[in-house]
Image (cartoon, rainbow, N blue to C red):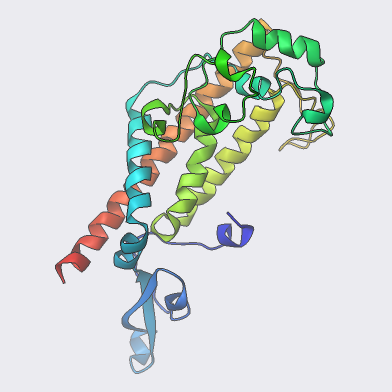
Length: 264
């Protein structure tokens, strides 16, 4: 999503914006009659605007259906907190320095020790968009074989990548989701990504975190690091599930707002 899109605030479906004639020119918006500017000046009237849910569902209905199903099914199953972020380690398994995705970052404990962590830990990555970046040698070590088609059946809220994806799915729903939900999803994705890199095999200590301090490693190869990672996972799962419910509420509101259109 482009920063300019993130800067656009939407009220969500079923909300009429007064004095919003410019908004009526936005994609998936429509003018809805006129509203008086003030009770004392009833002759001066300005167009109101609202999300054109009929047009949105006509074009993006399949996306809405998929996101609704994915988020609902994710909420229906218990989160798992035993992966310890090993997906990032599996993405560099048996790679030479020049093959790494982030070539400017050294591996925190070196290549041989990183490979040893992968080889001595069970890997149970449930997220397709993480699993598809496993190295050829690491992919067979995963206990699961997630695919794009099976994503609704495998997604679970303990997964950091699933938590970051709440922002992606919210962005895809565009104007039917209130702006504050999109912003909260962005903040969650930012917070998760920081931990995702801190728990990765890369040395990211040269970078500052959200609090301005150097990023400290979550050393998941140690018992203490595993406990820290699982603790952070639980917090992200709770925040992610709360956001999933808010997105589903926004979809329900959009469907309700679209119903009168279907009856016209």
